[in-house]
Image 1 (tube, rainbow, N blue to C red):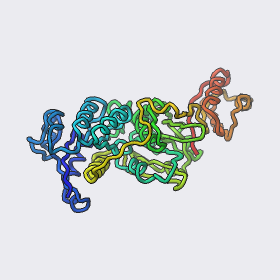
Image 2 (image 1 turned 30 degrees about the horizontal axis):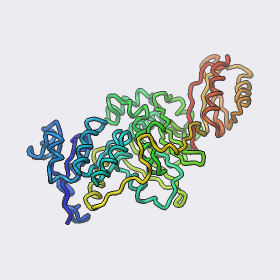
Image 3 (image 1 turned 90 degrees about the horizontal axis):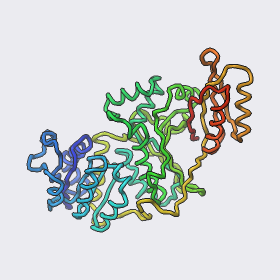
Image 4 (image 1 turned 30 degrees about the vertical axis):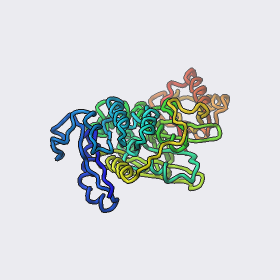
Length: 426
């Protein structure tokens, strides 16, 4: 029976969940996987936290040097988060020939190139299933389950915090501020929620997932990013009336014109499977040229779901003697030959506050026509005295065309304000 010694760097929520799974299921893994995995040591500043989990004081390392010099440690699990000191610790582990398993999407998205180079140099494993979509096995699906396909698109709800907030706004009519406060109370959102609500977390994940899906390095700088802080509950409500649900989506498409990768609030039809993914759950929808559509769904965060993904990597590493790395050109700035689409094409939902008088709608429609922007649907709803709300849904059009038209609208006397602009995906 193969044996493997593990060190865990960080005993926060995910580190604690990983330790729990590895220790409580030790005999189960021996029986079902044929591997004997032992947690040899942990690196945790809060010693009391380690002791409360049942870890012996002698197994609490005082430095990364103590961890990587331990001959019984084969696999180092990094669940600290952030770039430093995680990058330094992971690099030292790889330089020592240790296999690394990480859940750190920011570290991986920003420093994948250097980390993989160190792993290759030392013939060490580098695993990152838990970096994207929590317990959902999306990375192994992309690497080992979709080889027969050219993946055409990837679209997903890949941040649980924003999905919870948008669900709360849609189902209960909460404002963004109210929903965020509740998310923080429940522990879904951090005290400083910027990484989630401004789309950085989803951008890191989409960078990793689209690189694997399209077999070419997609840097975070190539991903268009827009968060949910400007989302208005009124737009969610109007969209709902029209048969749409609002989600923060990570969208990647590999087209003849080039690769497009974007993170932004998106209206999707209520019939779209992603529309029913609520609260902190995540889901990823893939389209392959051979298999067609596939969707993976599950918990995107949490001690045991994310710990499940980490332990999956630990078991895989323990059972295999040879490791595999990316087969695309994994440069720090990507491949210069990769073309990216900057002027995306989509449908648009546009809400305007306008003067409530005859001829205004005709004037706006004429402006759209003059700018070659085709309208699919128009609705007008009463506003305050002397003011009306006009909701326009466009046909497919380019970003540049919409921006040009919106600039014209802002200088139109009868238009008081552009209240909402949201992309739509059918």
